[in-house]
Figure (cartoon, rainbow, N blue to C red):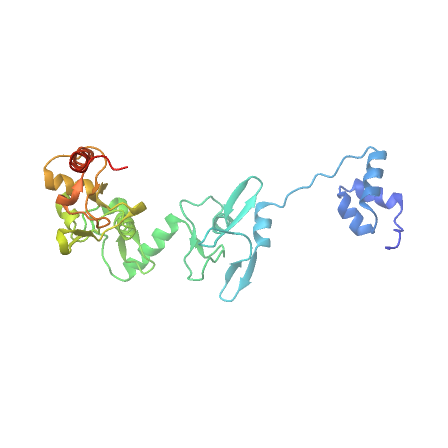
Length: 289
């Protein structure tokens, strides 16, 4: 059983008047917090208002110096990328963005990252916003004699809008990079050698097999053969049907053969064709119980 506290009421009241909270007083004087609350109430003294740490002070509590003048983030991180992040009041802040404010005395413009090579470094002297990053990399480009940034990328995109610079000053097209990521996910055709027509785009994802079947080799989101052309998704079944019959299908299109996901035009049926097939079957064999 713990020894009783020797703290006097006067000592407790003195700390209450200094603005300390009940639990802190209890820790410092080794007394019961309920005793502190009773004294506070008996003397009509208000509860202590807990003042949050200033933003910069809380940010510094999450940092640790490492070799090379870098600062390692020891606090919370966001998502799978592990981006340093902290909450202050009702808002969330990027650790790098706070570091930028500390060093430059202004809010950053755009995304803030360290350009020093140390992963997720939050040293205020090492972080740059989009404006600073562009200027620094432009200086590197000029020092290497790489010349002016071209007006268009090889794909014809406007580089005054889409140009970005690597740390070594090499220019690249942000729009091309975005489209390459979409192509990797099967959401659009690759930039190189894009098909000139819907039929060509469809044929690129097909492969003839025995029995007159055509195997689909392209993307199948949710099990449905699909491809992209002219920035729009197209269902392979409907395109193959249209190429075979010269008309748009009516209703759902699916293979009438026994090969799963076959996209051979003669093997595909729309709703009216299935109804005719069912009617012929009934006329020949009658109703099957």
